Length: 374
Image (cartoon, rainbow, N blue to C red):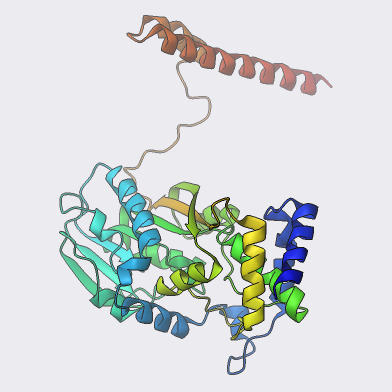
């Protein structure tokens, strides 16, 4: 049944190397798809996601017999957010977890770092079935885009794998910045653009082969190049944005989609296709295995994570010195290194690095002088 799809997958893999770049061009065509019946014509343009459906999906996932069975990814990212909180050597009297779900960050924190935590999520069932934490917590059902708190309320705001579903990300960042106290910090994580690229490509190829066209089945994600700009526009300073990839192996495409549903991560875009035909799904599974399958028969799923840290401005924060105000040169530092109580190999490496900076500076000045003469 899936023979034609496998042949197509082999041909495309031979042509583009099986990588993600060769198939990304296809995703642009899906932007022209119209919202399903019942959605307003403008909702897809101004509000790409059906927030009511997302609430239902998350509530359904939280009510399953074993909700923790599909929480492995959220728990892992939650622990990495907690590590970044611990890196800041201070105690936060009041913190806010935006899109907390079942408390994936709180379970990794302690009361020595966070004295009190407010957990906010759009799904009430997720808050009711939250994981136990030693931190005193208060649960509030609210939308991430419309935080019901006063300005300058929290010392810390965290968010893990929730903001990729908001319709107005700039507004959400502004809301977070507004509720932070001066010198407060926001630490968050959200899915990046390469998330589930294997699933996206497999479904698109299967639909092209079986139905002559395709619709988006994986929601759009923010690019890392835009994230820092959005945070800066919201008012955050001293920004840090870094990326990471987590790869999870599954028995097949159907097991992956089952776990995504259990995470509450099913697609809720207005322009999604409401139904996938069985033949298309079987073909997609065959393409997935042929193009990306591991030698042991499993298939990988890539989750790209963007981590971000931003501070709300305060006069006490350190600021970069004015250019030209330095009193010690790299050359002087290179002469000081031999006097330090360090291993000889470390001294040699530090001296080499400092001298390279000196040489680059000399070359830059030389080029500037030549350019000014010309």
